[in-house]
Amino acid sequence: MKKTLIVTDMDGTLLDRFQSVSLENLAAIRRFKADGGLFTLATGRMEAAVLPYISQLEIDLPVILYNGAKIYSPVTGTVIYEKHVTVPQPLWKRFTGWLSGDTALLVYRQGGVYAPLRNGVLELHERKEGVRCGQMRDEWIDEPITKILFIGPRQQLESVEAIIADSGLRCETVYSDADYLELLPAGASKGAALRELQRLLQIDGLYTVALGDNMNDVSMLQEADLGIAVENAAERLKEVADAVTVHHEKHALAAVIREIAGRQSADGR
Image (tube, rainbow, N blue to C red; front, side, top):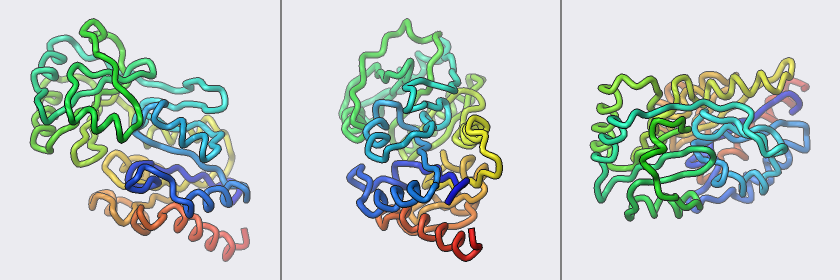
C-alpha cells in the first residue's frame, strides 16, 4: 500500500445516512494505513464539521475543505493553502433578496459560518453538519470569504446561478448535492486542491485514488490516477469515473480498499 493515497469525499461516499463512518469502513481504513497506505478527506465541509472525523480516523495528512478552497493540516492546526472570493454589495443584496422560507444562504469566512436569515432549512443543515451559524453582518461583504452555500429547490438554485453568471463575478459554482449550490473562489476545486496536496507531500511515484458521489467531485476524480464513483453517484460523475464501486451504504471505502489490496497483491507490490 506504500505510495498509495486514497482521498475520499464524505457525504454520500464515506459517511452513511446517519453521518457516521461504518465499522467496516473504519476497520478497512485502519488496515490500509497500517500497511503503509496514505488516507485523507476532500469535502465541502468546514473545519468544525470535519474535526470529529479527523480524530476518529486518526488522519495526519492535510485535508481538503470547502470543496477545494482550503487545505488544512490537522497536525499543526493551520491552514496551508487557501483561496478567497469577494462579493460586492450590489450582488450581496440580490442574494439576500433571493432568500425565502424554503431557501438558505450560508457564508463561510475565517473558519466560521454565518447566515443572514434563520429558518427551518438552515436549522436542518446545522443539525446535519453539527455546527451552528452565527449572524451574518452586512459589513463583512466586500471582504474576502471562503465560500457561499445556497440551499433550496433546484429551480430556485438555478435562478441564483443565473444571478451569479449575470454579475460577471470571477468565481466557480458547483452543485455539491441536488439542493446545494456553492459559490467558490476562482480556480477552487477539489481537483486543483488534490494537485496542490500532491505537490505538498512531495512523494515520488505517488498513486492517487479518489472517491466521490456528486458533481463537486468531478475534477478530483479526473485529477486522480484512479477516479471511483460510488453506485449512488450522479450519473455524470459515473461517466467521468474510471470505475464504479458499491453504494455508500454498503461500505464503499472498504470495498475499494479490498480491490486495491487485491490488485497490488496480484502485481506483487
